Length: 105
Image 1: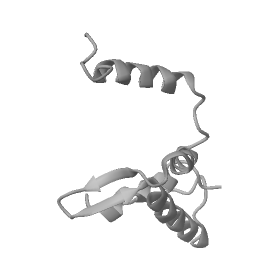
Image 2 (image 1 turned 135 degrees about the vertical axis):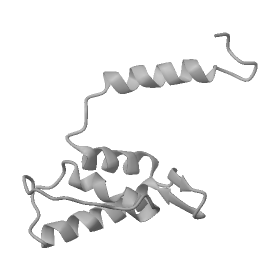
Image 3 (image 1 turned 180 degrees about the vertical axis):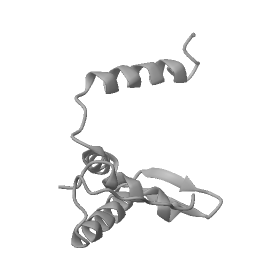
Image 4 (image 1 turned 90 degrees about the vertical axis):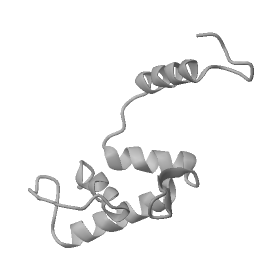
């Protein structure tokens, strides 16, 4: 695909990004991935819940996820603990799984 008049085509940029991601080492877990994203792009919007009129930045998501993780630890939930969760598809639910998927000590 030829470059657009104002720069690279979106497909070229996407391909470059994929190559860069695949060349990078994987984070230890999803919590580490979120911590890195928040450090790099803390004020950038990660999710835009336009129907609810809410936006979430990487940093605010990281804070909320860490709060959930802290509460789970207080409750005695650790790595290896079996936990079932049923959540509605609404903004507060979307950050819940981040810490549950691999970062508990």
